[in-house]
Length: 115
Length: 112
Image (cartoon, rainbow over the protein chains, first blue to last red):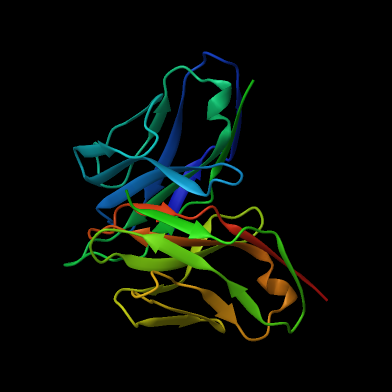
């Protein structure tokens, strides 16, 4: 298994540009999430999905869109990039069980700089 | 809302020293608690977890006990190594496990 993969690893955008960060997992996990990591703030949840066709907002959803058309893929779209979106983005997936409490598996991250 | 607070870093220790990283939480209900570790340039990896009060999670010499009475989940290791240098995150999850709430992270640097 490749686990959770993310592309690209690095990206530089200009303010106002749009782009999609890709995330895929081959573990047949239902739950997937996007986080951003900023210095001194830990990781903050952007959006998450409990299964194909179902998404919901996390703590910091503004400026980002997601969709979940398949179990494997969970892309994150930046509609109009802003310097405040400069961050490291992590995708994660987790298998559900009765009662939850499962480990989340993280991808290697995408480092995004918005000029 | 739910939250996690960790001791601020960076923490610098000599090899074989004792490590404690404090973590306290605020949550409704009965969350699960986790410690994740991030090595330089990598994503996060689960280090250990505890799912109910008084549970002790352990892995690679690290331990943490879920203390409901003090709402704490402090990370400890008896003898750190240079290879333990990383950023450590305390986190709690909602009942479904799909959402994690993280502390701000504590950077650990271990010197030979």
